[in-house]
Amino acid sequence: MKTLTCPVNGPRPLSEFFYGGALRLMPDPSVDDTLWADAVFNRAGIPGTRREWWCHIPSYTWFIAERDTATDVVTATYLFQGGAP
Image 1: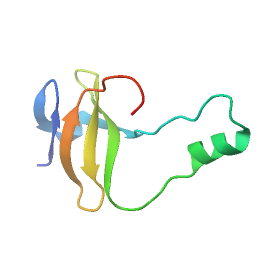
Image 2 (image 1 turned 90 degrees about the horizontal axis):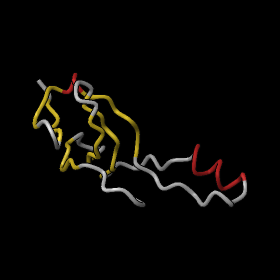
Image 3 (image 1 turned 90 degrees about the vertical axis):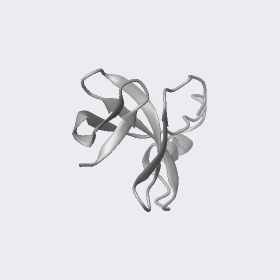
Image 4 (image 1 turned 180 degrees about the vertical axis):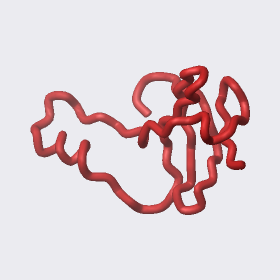
């Protein structure tokens, strides 16, 4: 069984988690529509380590997981500290 470590609840079965997407920087709200569209719709698909949002469903704990997309190995999990990623 594949597990993921919640920073609050410890190692749990992957079925207890929800993937929330990549952690991405938001552009300045005053930029034009072209830059907003680029930030929303265009992503690099290059394999490597990514920071992603994950949620432990039973406790509704949202956290960041650093995962290598080439090997699907999670190297770290931690609570989001606020501010720009």
